[in-house]
Length: 216
Ligand SMILES: [Zn+2]
Image (cartoon, rainbow, N blue to C red; front, top):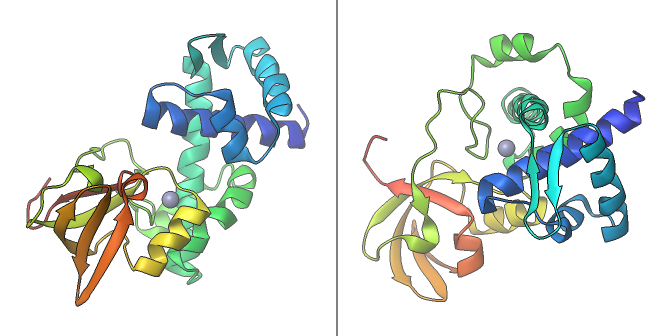
């Protein structure tokens, strides 16, 4: 298989994996949005992926990865997250920029995983809180479902997208930061240090938190 075709396939599989993780199933329109391509392009590529037995696609149920598709997606995701760690921890790239750059590197780092792990000290999570090793428990609640007057620590940004990460950076809301929830309505209002930050519910639903000072 040509290198560029492998890239395309890997990008689709990872995108479908991310969407499945978040919504249970992937929709053509969401894949097109995340990969910044047209619906027609997505449809054509889905036919290819189905022919390779990497996805199941039924018209009204949406798209799901087969076991084979999932295995490839997880390998690429792991490489992506290690690349992000390399960028932030060793090269000093900002956390919100690492996702986009890692997206380009992830395809060409095959075979380097164990070296990266060693150099990086076996990181368990990417800079956005998503798991690198299988033993990381996905826990916590969405910030949009938090209770008011409680303190929470940000642990994860689930659907990594540069626009979202840049927005969160402007708010200074990133993994490891503790916030106090002031109100939960259409807008989630949180206190972050001395500052009050108001987040639209949609954005708050992409940020996972746990109650501060609780070990999970
Ligand atoms: Zn990440």
